[in-house]
Length: 215
Image 1: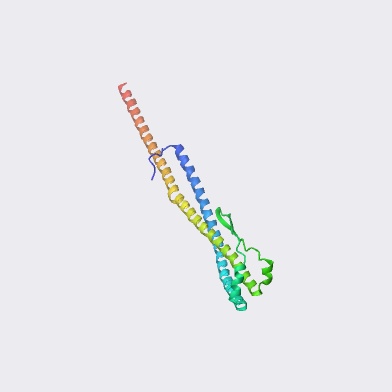
Image 2: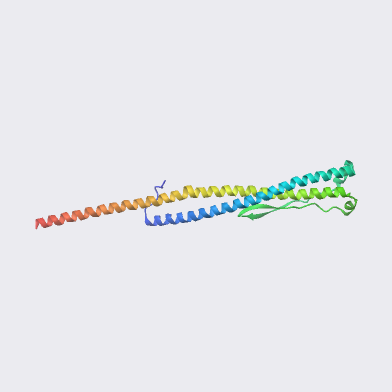
């Protein structure tokens, strides 16, 4: 629907046509961006899926290592050693840019180093358990980073789709309707001018004929 405030002038026609050109360029850029975001989304999705599969295998190995350590050292000693283990370092989160979308970059942090005297006293089976669960911790953080990025990319894909749809289905048709309206008014004015010109010529002819008859 064309707004009643549109003035049917040549300047307005040129301005509206320029806006259509710019809108189509913007639409193409949004479609390219959306395609690139979708490619990045599926690439990250495959990585996250592979990490989840790896996590399942690592967790199984970790519990098996704990089971073996408990069999060899006993549950009481295992619990006592667990109380001496260092805590996890704080995780540092920064941001990175993925196709114009800011996503978190998670620093794995890791564990504080074990004291030398504790290292010497730890049985091999418990060392193996610690290594397995430290690896699990890193994989969990990597999965969290990628799945957060996936959510943000999906949100941006939907946002880009809505913007492209608004331009393609609302803005451009409205601008094209404005162009048709202005051209229609031009045609009307041209017909009115032509009709007026014919009327003027006819009256001039009638006046000249009347003058000739009177002479």
